[in-house]
Length: 170
Image 1 (cartoon, rainbow, N blue to C red):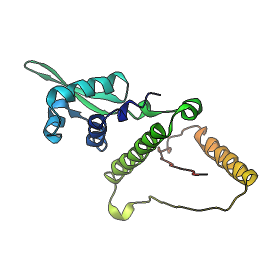
Image 2: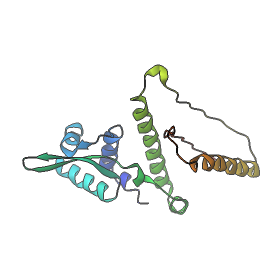
Image 3: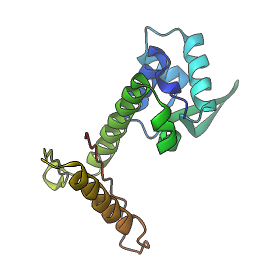
């Protein structure tokens, strides 16, 4: 994966502007919100992020002079596999983890918009475990098996997408 989102501050600002906007924003709307970014610079970075599949077009609006695209974060563009992770340097890993937490925040904000405060069933937990290397490897394997068991379940009429977020710092 290219860590294109974090090549510079402008891309990071664009991502932060779009993080809680699944309906997307046009470049003109982003330009109003990002007053310190020149319009030409914004166009260039949005187009580059779109080409890198970090942004997606969620709708197109017809105007007298043409069309206006609305861009949103493309979560699928931010996947990284084990090989890419192993080859990434520390700075790239920190950048990726920053995106990861931004994505979790966006998911929570989108969820929270659909419910009343008293219906919020979000849970959080941080646990420090004292484990030897073998115990830790077994824990990770057990956790992986549990997640895969439910990930591979067939969807039914009552299925609803759930977001499970884990960070393990060995």
